Image (cartoon, rainbow, N blue to C red; front, top):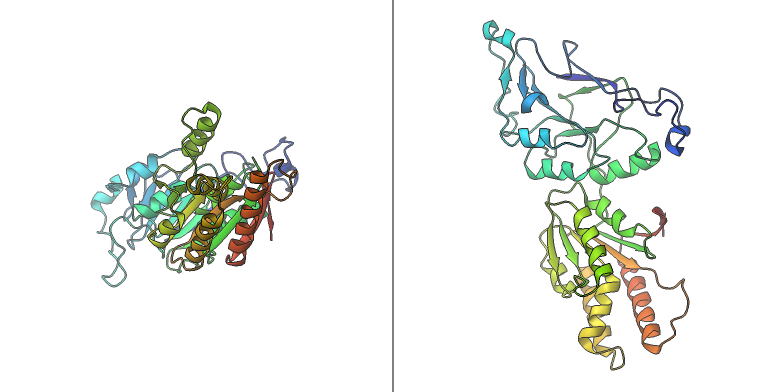
Length: 361
């Protein structure tokens, strides 16, 4: 099956005509045209009626070709295609009743039930839908995942490429022909250990979530309190919870080293500052002996170094603010600074997040 992507933007082009935003202003008119898909030169999306030998899948969002290869289009801001593919009943074209039976792929190349060869998806609003597709077995290592529906929700082609590399998705120019007979290009390797530093409201947590959004299984490690008795803190916790993908698992713990050692999925740790504050509390170290805190940090660094799973951790950059007025505040700042430095030395990727922008260190 060959797919001609005549247009890869959304309902309007990117840049959107007359739009003054920075994303649109940086592109030439007609850079990406509205979404248009032609399959094998014989049928177009939407798949309301298809030629003999083709079958409509997933409530019109998918198509199976005469060679048995399968296409799925996941439109923006909807779960319809995801819901439909949980039980992908095929609909034959009305014209196919008198047509020869479609040729099935050989046993050696047949795809598992439900697996698609090419998936076209708009990931900009909800990249976690790619993770759901992978979790459901609809997207595998051999699936070509290509982004469509592109527009000024992303600030530039460069930023788009960065995000897609994190998600194992690729973008192609308008006019590209995709061929199911060709192997999917390998996804870029991701760092096993990534440390994201930043100040308050810098965007570091959102960036951490973005990095793992398309993974099928993720464990979110919450190290802070739930905010009982503190309405403002509880609202922050609630905003974080509502923003992250619903299919992620959540663990609330201060046993960070143990959680890393026993992990069976990628981890997102948010964050090291709240973890260290909790450790100070547990050890009575604000005004007492701080040796137990140092021991817990040693244990964490060792677990971080020996991890078998990917980890993305968020931490506060505390070295650029005012000097704390109290001895305990200075001790906390110094301990967190040392911990950040030690973990950075053991990480393949470290970045400072400022105003939602990344500065790789």
